[in-house]
Amino acid sequence: MEKRELLYEGKAKRVYATADPDLVIVDYKDDATAFNGLKKGQIQNKGALNNKISSYFFELLAVKGIASHYVRCLSAREMLVKKLEILKVEVVVRNIAAGSLAKRLGLEEDTSLRRPVLELYYKDDELQDPMINEYHLYALEIATEEQVRHLAATALEINEILTVALQERQIVLVDFKLEFGLFHGSLLLGDEISPDTCRFWDAATREKLDKDRFRRDLGGVEEAYEEILRRLTGGN
Image 1 (cartoon, rainbow, N blue to C red):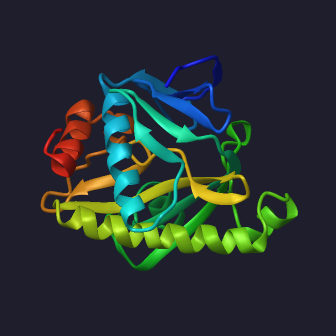
Image 2: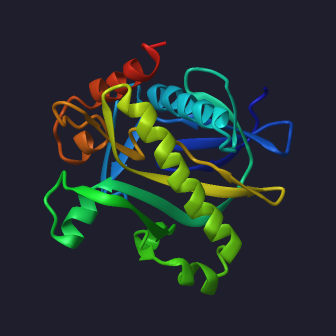
């Protein structure tokens, strides 16, 4: 698939046009950011690792009936995806208190929640992605009631699928962020599923295996991403 002009460059990815107006190429970068871009750096081989990890998860979800933008992996850092009209909302599912949830509710980190918590955030860097609810989505005409029901149901279904799959690999799915977009009227899962967008902990030691190692200056960031890929695929 021929890569054409650059359409968009974000914090972690570049998006390129192709000869097919319905398809684009996502090129994963090694750049890392945290705290809404206030902290910046690079993680060696992050782009290649996240491309492989995201490809694995998209393929797993496809088998389980979850439709996404993913078409196929093209190279070490690139995947071919459907061109979505991304909704300006981030959907976060939390299973264990960590990060901002622990701070907001005064919970000790690693407090298990009785049931998953679903949160919505307005996707706007300048506003630092504030938390919203479904009524904001209706008022801002970001999504319809039917679409919001679909977002919530799909996010919780993905949570169940990933939780079970990761348990088999001795990984705890603490929380994760999803994005969705429209493709010819159909609402599809987009963006990525990786240690950049999920909190993964080792089931036995509770060692962090995700971008929190970068956020908190814990070191061993690349090694943590490599460990996730190794457990998922055997390193292939």
